[in-house]
Amino acid sequence: MKTIPYDCLKNPAQSLEVVDSNNAPLCIMAKEDVLRQCLPHRAVALLVRDRRGRALLTLGEQGWGFSSYGQVAAGMSCESSAQDILSREWSQEGGRLASLGLMPPSPSNGLTFLHLYTASLPRSIIKTRALARDRHLLVDQDEMKGLGSHFGDLLSPVMYAALEGGYLSHF
Image (cartoon, rainbow, N blue to C red; front, side, top):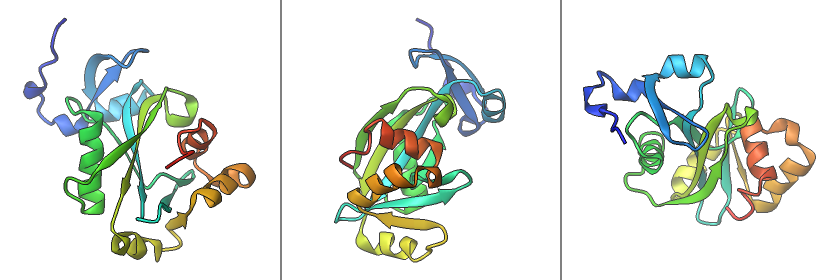
């Protein structure tokens, strides 16, 4: 099997691996081209929680969704990408991640192999973000189920699919 020479990339953070139906890399392309052409690639979604287990949802263009989301840069592992998001967006170096599972490509997740993670953060961080009620929503497990059952149209397609798929049954 050939190895992909990641060290020759000018800007690996702006490149993604296009993957096949088995999540194996096929080639490396510019991020903007992969997204524009809706080619299968890898992404991660992070659901941050407080110590009591409540999840912090973020309001995006498509509705309430995961706390953070990002594509996996070429040559980077999914867990490393989630750690990078945890560090960059949540100021948590080396935080402990737990895997919630892998969602296969579908129209709801932009045809990505979506690796789902959760992380428990200090109350002070969650509390500060939760104060921005127009942008964040702090929910417990029952409220999350209620959103999915009764107000699914308020959730992003990815969040709704994760709830329906059982990925968030014990976050």
